[in-house]
Image (cartoon, rainbow, N blue to C red; front, top):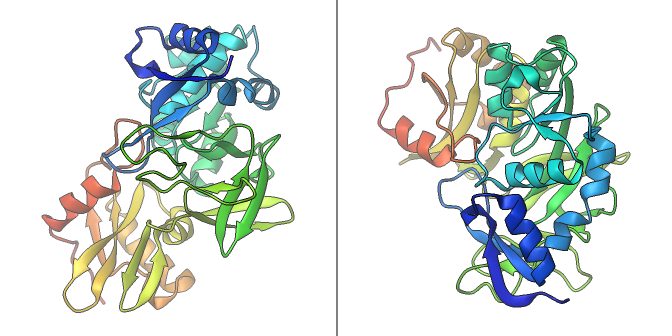
Length: 341
């Protein structure tokens, strides 16, 4: 049965799996929130089949089956967690109520770091990480703790785009990836229909989603492809223009996170003379001098943070990602660390 105009908000159901089944049986669209790195999510509409078609590939890639116990600590208002919950039921896997009982866990990089810090998962547990870039240093720490790390890249609007089992992000089964003018475009059966908001009759609506005449879609993430491996450089909006130079914060974070002992996040702050400046917030005070030295070695002058801040923790969104908008607001009211030039 084709989807009707009526949609079902899965996040409003006490049991979202039941809501998913109901929407699928009734031929209705499902309405879901996006879970980006700001506190202002949009809502999207997609068919239940756009998720169901990816179930078997996720089962094969993750190894989740009827013998698995899946730990999903994040809120079900985040689509990655909601999908994980529905997929676990499809795979006949049990839900782990505590991390120590899990064979598999779905985590963001922020929650993975804290899970590794607190030694919550048993060696041999498979962790499936999504929602943000996975720093190499964090992946190495998790592997050193005996965890099997998978990482996938996608978006609420696009669903799965690429999956990494240790050999780099490679196109998810059934997905075509094209890099056009440095922007990642995908064509797949897993993408959403449109935004669920005024102006959302087309695929773009009031949001970043765009579709071309060949059916490829994008949310504006930047990236490059080499030998079948996708490198994601962040969204075009996740950039700081300082003195006329555009700096992608993902590039700066990727270069510095390998040397960081704690968490690090890079944002832009307004500057009267330069328009904006690149600044870095770290949770480990000893990282300031170490990362300043690394920045001088591996970053271009415009990419090097002009100010450094030490914070107790990075503020999360409801979906468990770093809330960059909240962090920038917090840093605007804080004093940077005084460092020797």
